Image 1: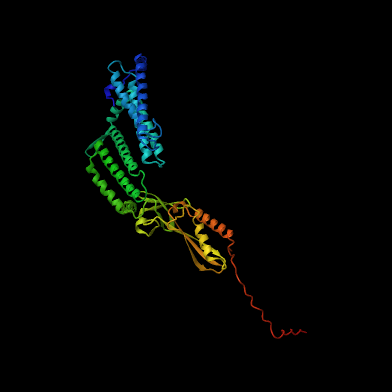
Image 2: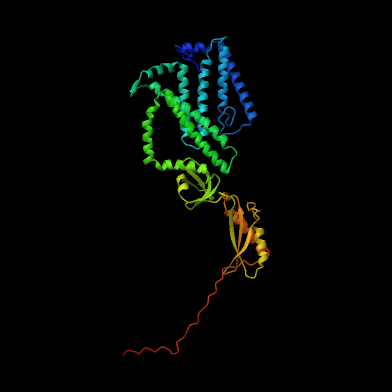
Amino acid sequence: MSTRSELPMFDDVGQWLRAFAQPTVLLEIAALAVCVALAWLMVSALRRTLRRNEPRSILFGRRVIDGVLFPLTLLGLGYVARSLLAQWVPLAAFKVVIPVLISLVVIRVGVKVLQAAFPQSAWVRPIERSISWVAWLGMVLWVTGLLPLILQQLEGITWKVGSTTLSVRTMIEGFVTACAVLIVTLWISSAIESRLLRSVTGSELSVRKALSNAARALLMFVGLIMALSAVGIDLTALSVLGGAVGVGIGFGLQKLAANYVSGFVILAERSVRIGDNVRVDSFEGRITDITGRYTVIRSGVGRESIVPNEMLITQRVENLSLADPRVWMSTVVSVGYDSDVDLVMRLLADAALVNPRVLRDPAPAVALSAFGADGLEFTVGFWITDPENGSLGLRSDINLAILAALRAHKIDIPYPQRVVHLKPQEWPSQPPARPTPVA
């Protein structure tokens, strides 16, 4: 970044226009065009070499100019071109180009890191706009030469906090430093998370998710401490705040703390994992995500339940795929008593195999389960490994195949029958007496 002595300090608009009216400005524009072309070629070649086409890639993005790598490369080439041209011609355009490129780098870094770290958060968009406005405003103040004057005036506004003297400039610089450090830590934690969670499933995914959450929390804590130290805040003064936070956690935030601790315990013990089918408090579904505070369970009908992690530790949880991902399902069929039992069992077993989701090993099993009031009841049992895809369509396919097979072999599917016995009415042996007329 340029020093204060290199900032363009124009006395008036006429001097500004005269600087850009020099013939050497065309040489600077040509050098800038060469830098843009070289940066585009370098990033394109690196993209093809690494075969990156990931939307959440911070360095590359969706397109060549969408990621962080293109403005960073262009800024480096711009500094090289400015250093070379400064030996031969007076600079005018590059005194504006360099601040613009720095602002572009700040915007792209902030936006891409926030998009990768918090992909589904609604508050990311307003923060991205705020970063853009602040970066472009700083660029305008830098180019016009007003930035050092404003900082000098803000440095004069001071107040004392204990034994420390703070100024508005110190607070602004500390805030900018803290934001920069947090952005860098988020960048590093996002890179670690994408590396850990790449192409993994099941129990390994849960372990890597725990490591990713722990790495992000540690990096955020270290980044915050570094930012506070850079501002000049005495960290020993935070001991009182830490004690107050501890008391708050002990009384008012104990449930929240219990959920976070339970989340790390779940990810470490792997009692439930991402991808497991569980039943919690009469809600059954597949675990799609385990965060520090809660677990997301998605049912087969599309509903999602957000379960606090403490509930998974303190209450009874049925894990349908902890030791074995296979799930047994069944359907019941009734046929007439005069049907060929062996033929029926063979037809039912073959019909269960019409759907490719049904496992061939172990094969479907058919059993004569009951002598019903209307006919013989057979239970067709089969195994699947993907209950998260639903069971209604699977049962429908199997029932339709059973119905077609029974009708093709003219096997009777009895209707519900009831026999009603009427008890004969008993007539009296003598006719009833006639009433005596009243005079």
